[in-house]
Amino acid sequence: MAEHVAARTPADQQRVLDYWTPQRMARALPIELLGLATSGKGLLGDLTGGRALPSLPGGPGRAAEPAEPRHHAAAAPSAATVGSRWGAGGLVARTTGRVFLTVAGADFVCSASTVRSANKDLVVTAGHCVKDGAGEWAANWTFVPGYRSGGKAPFGQYTARRMFVAGPWSRSGDDNYDIGMVALATSRGRHVADVVGTQEIAFNAPRGGQAFGFGYPADPPYNGSHLVYCAGRLRDDPHKQTRDQGLGCAMTAGSSGGPWMTTFDPGTGKGTITSLSSFKYSDDQRTMYGPYLGDAAKALYTMAGRA
Image 1 (cartoon, rainbow, N blue to C red):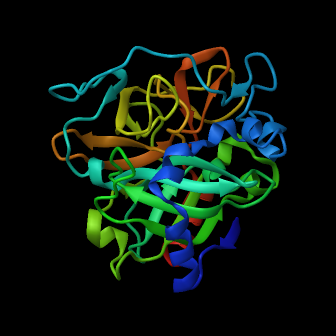
Image 2 (cartoon, rainbow, N blue to C red; image 1 turned 120 degrees about the vertical axis):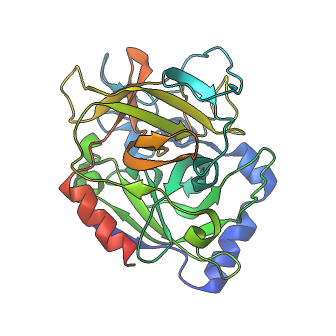
């Protein structure tokens, strides 16, 4: 695995917090557009599964996706939806948040979730929301749980202290290991787990079954202002290019890193994270794929949870 020290001192952390004005947050782009925003300078544009434009027809692609009909909050959560606004509240509305980060001088957004850990500071997200494959680490990394429109942070903003990605992701951008763990600094002296709570996480879980995926998609027809969810049965990668599983989901760019939960209770908003939003194939914009959390992810979690 690979590790990076982020905002180490209180002064560093304050500098990052000051950087993210509401205006900067509003202008930040989904990380999937990294290659376009940096004129192709980021390594993500060169890797198989590059997030700017698909590298091969039918291959993994993280380009901005075509517009889907706008979905409004449902009266009650559905067990099958490709993208609806989450209006049921509960724990997930607090533990899921937006991530703001800078790579190659440009500002981007992702999604993430708090997870139970020994240090009470841990969030899980996609590896590409933390490090540009074999390229540089993200800077100005900040988590805003329960984000609301207009840059509102009802539970505070938490900067990264230490960042971790799996070794195969750091070396080559291997989609099977598109996992990141970030140990956060406290906000006003309080750990994120004590403020918003946490979700459970499981490794080497049975494949398939029902899952709920959450995130803050920011590409049209979404604008990043609302928590959105997908729900359905998981299925294996039909192209057999990865060990990832797919979930029917029309969420657009910006949802990367958002948690997928099984044994999820829509009434309480509590579940167990078993994957996260990672990529889509360029010829199938209605299926999101997420990495299988195996031994490498477990080792990453153990180290990051003690950081």
